[in-house]
Image (cartoon, rainbow, N blue to C red; front, side):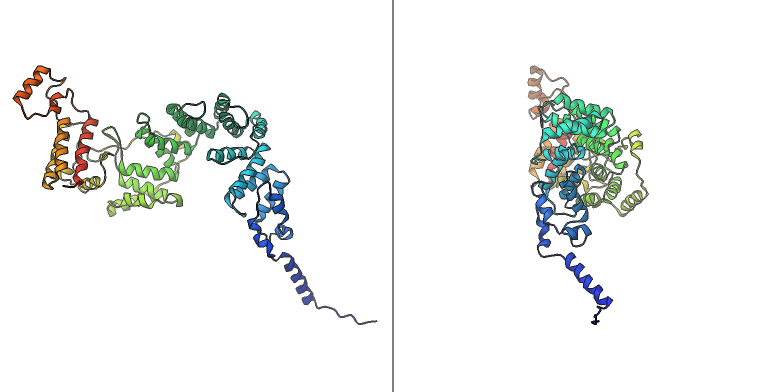
Length: 475
């Protein structure tokens, strides 16, 4: 009987191990698989070029196991897998980021009635993306979900109807779907309605009052993002008739109390400068509160605002900084239910702590703020409801400018006094009275003589601003 030489077990295990490694080790071409095109048109070819064994075992695959499974399911026609693959491609999560391919797979999923995919397609379309999907098929596929009362499907179909995508434009049907979804409790649908009326859309003229009403409804349904939007728009809407800093403060405060970092950052900026309506301060500057909210916002890496921190903290004392830190450390968020039920009172406005008018520009604003708690007469902020106080303040600025030999500032201030000082006669002088007055007062200002009414607080503030901006001018 011939002698059979047996291979030692250790050696055999090593041979098997080498064989496994040979199968699993990345081959040269596999390293380039990350550059493959995974769009619906080319994904099958890209999938075929993947090292199947390595990808199924999770070792040495150029895409993640999650992406491999999603790709496999997407190619098999699974709409959930198509949506998942789109999300991974959009984020570059476990697979090379490819926005175009992501939109393609969103389209495939939406054509099969995937509601979240249809909503995402609407979103990227409004950002200017090309949508290669069959939107008529998407609209038809959303129908069953709408009939079952799916509010997100109603939102997706409403957008298609309002903008005439996938079928004729039907603004009323679109608005009706959003109202139906809101009635069913969808805060997102109410926000959609609000944005449509605020911004305008085909067949929907801009109507800020209606838009704010729907955004308020969205907020009351628990949508913190709607609270933030309302707060921001009440402060920054292009129409002065719409702006309402007091209402904006209330909505920003609600969102901030619910721990929204964007609202906390915005509220910090509001409290830094305060806010005015006409010549009246409705929100007093409060650097300690501003710093507290900024510290809370900075817990989010996206709202750790260094430039705002510099503005807030550069004039704060150590005691004020410590107080802001203490307040931030002791703060706790409120529930959305609680903030909706809250009555948000405006902070008190002490006489000595009013807002500087927005038209007071740098570097003049800095010169006035340098007075701090003990301002020079020219640095004092007057009470714009008292014309005599404004005249005194303008005269003080003029005297300061005379000491600095700033001729333009002096001239401007002297001119503005004529617009603030009481008119010679309330209701105006008759032509005969005016002629007589000029004969008796040859140096009288024609502006003051011809005025009929006392300056309003807003007019007085404007005159003070024109004078005050001159303190930083050249001689």
